[in-house]
Length: 396
Image 1 (spheres, helix red, strand yellow):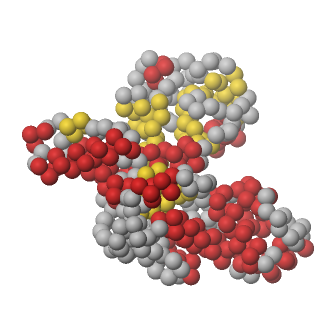
Image 2: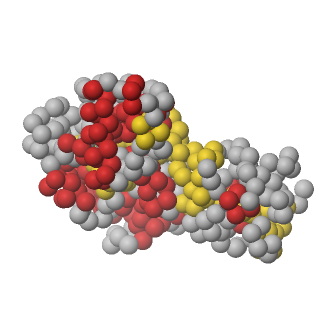
């Protein structure tokens, strides 16, 4: 699974990416700082079942700290997007291509309104950040529509002759964009479209593209630079209907992580506070900066950076954490490692889905599963719950 970090230039996108992944992205105050996509790993948190077992775990594909499991998520930070990107303006085509496999998007906006539509610095509060949300969605909609429109009349007429369903035809057109046929079916089922796709107009195709984008590339809004944003901007963004909007300060999160790495403070990502470990080692500027950050944490509850990722994974994508084991009694793998793996699965996934996630052979040879918490035998269609510990029994 891949989460894309998107937005126009100069909104703190690369700072956000670096703060989230602690990777060294290039950070500067000018458009197109990021040209090649930066890739890194962020972590979402979940309560580790080893607390219920009463025995320490031995994580293999994740981390565990003080009873909290940190599950990795791949993050990609791509070039800033400017109006007209779908027509190739700026680095538009590259930006859009880099997001093909993203399961969800974190849209970083400048909540302070101090960057214009092109990403150039302007007076604070002079640009409406809500305009940036609309423009990015519009660019993506036109990008998908342009792919669909290519040879549409000829392809759709041929498809109609052989009785091909519209969702199958659309799926074939969008191959490589990480969009499933079921997502396309869900996207177009509520639209009032002409029965014959060959009669769809450009407006119909744009409407289809918009619905597919919403279904396949869900988006959460990080209202960045919240530390300097006018309160009215934050209030309008929080009340934006149909969106999850979280105020963030990527700059503060990055400062806290760097201070923690230097041993100056004790800080856990997502926390509402930090503890100074070496007050005598701080100069006056550092003390002033940390006091300012502490005020922000008290007002907002966190820097928002970790919260954005977790809301994207657990709310936007509606994923749960499941732990496959080979020994249902001791919750171990064949080497005796306790709760070695944690998998993110869509809510509603079944025991067989988990088997396929672990290995194709397990899925194809699935016989039954065992709920390690209860010892109950469960069938292939049993719906998994968050925090489940499951043994898969399959033909060898």
